[in-house]
Image (cartoon, rainbow, N blue to C red; front, side, top):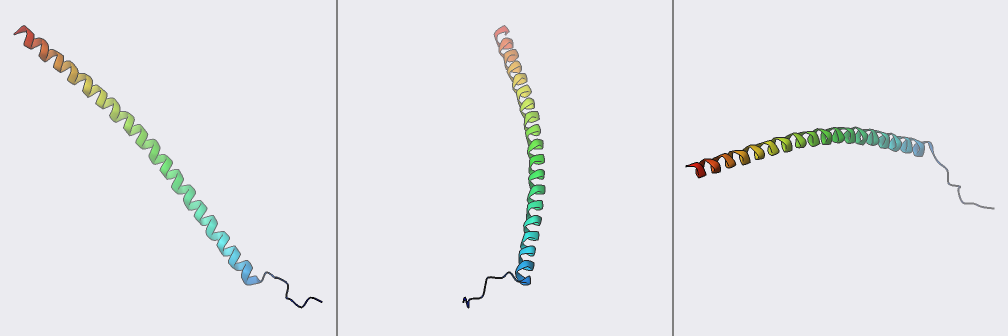
Length: 77
């Protein structure tokens, strides 16, 4: 005869497990939303970076053109 008590899952164990599962579901949902917001922010920042790069390129081109004009005016004088 085996006199040891068999391992039984009690109602308290089930409630604790259910609570933990609910916590994990909430955490997963929160992380999913945070991930969505971060991806949205990344897309926005990439777009902004491209616009700024374009403006920088245009400013560089205009500056180079002005320098060339100034040099040509120097040689004419």
